[in-house]
Amino acid sequence: MAKFIESYDGINGNYQFEYDDCDDFSILLREKVTQIYAVCYLIENPGKIIVVHNSKKDTWGLIGGSIEKGESYEETLRRELHEEGNVNVVDWLPIGYQKVVNLDTGEYSYQLRCVVVGRQDEGGFDGDPAGTVDQVAIIEPKDHSKYFDWKQIGRYVFQRAEELKKKLNY
Picture 1 (cartoon, rainbow, N blue to C red):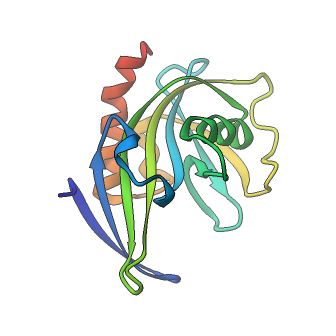
Picture 2: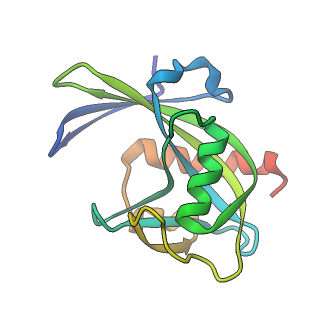
């Protein structure tokens, strides 16, 4: 049973988000895992995280994205953080996962959530090769709701990230 269940009525359908904690993503059916996102703490900005603006959707969110064919979860995480924020992953841990169920079709996929300690390359953000991310912001984690509100699930993911970052010696 999921820890949290929330509904979302969107342009592309009606969805149910089912969130649960995990410390090992191997419990999930690999072919159903489509995306990975990170609460990324930056070494050079102690206590702060990076969030990104998606220019195509005009929304802010966590840094991350789609898993490409043949990539491991860690490879995707490292690639996405570097592409979207010019961030190199120093260490990371799983937070949990969100099962996204399309209530109209019954189809589902999993999105992974991680906590990351990273180091941003000198010069900071210099553009996303995919052209999706057009801005990054370095913020206090408590301020994330000024950028996006992911309801109870989002608040819990940030709370869990704060707890788990201690295991990363951050």
